[in-house]
Length: 243
Ligand code: NAD
Ligand code: ZN
Image (tube, rainbow, N blue to C red):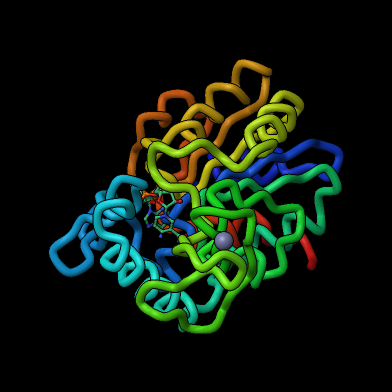
């Protein structure tokens, strides 16, 4: 593992194009629960069963209660060493992009700016009927209403089974097509289309790296698999780079 880490470190060259994909595991050390594994339960519900348009249609109050709980929980969390390391990496590598599946906003709070939040944000709300959308950090009522048309607001996140925000997939595919190095961090690689980014980058000739506590379906596609905590591995990778 140490040998692989040193080799990946050597690949982090300011002349290279680096694309990083992160998932819920990057925020686990900040105290934000992941969806899979033992943390993926809220009350008696699986988080995956609530983050769905059909769940919201059937039980909007329950889904909003879940999201209001998540908003409150994340408001009390801080970015960790993994988020901070990726912000440093961005400053040292001019041709850099961070694509996150996370909706917690912790990458931005750590200072990342070349950032695509492909699944939206917990801090965004939008109307289920009209075009109204806004950033909202204040606590919301159990069933928040649109100030423009009075219909129900929904979380501004992309739920399972929904299409991505327009333009996001095109941008990701374009960027992956030019990557020299692709690093996936803390994602189970089970949610599409993000799970296919690894293959896409590899097909275009990128060197691929996976950082995760355990093996994922994409480990076999990785030139380097670094297994351990993102908050330990990423600081080691950027050691020597100055912010
Ligand atoms: P996931 O919950 O499916 O998988 C998390 C992965 O992170 C696992 O493979 C696990 O082994 C790994 N992991 C856990 N702790 C880690 C650590 N300290 N270091 C390195 N790896 C670690 O997450 P996903 O793949 O991102 O898919 C879940 C979907 O749910 C995403 O689409 C996302 O939008 C959403 N989600 C977001 C958040 C968030 O914003 N923080 C949290 C949960 C789920
Ligand atoms: Zn409206």
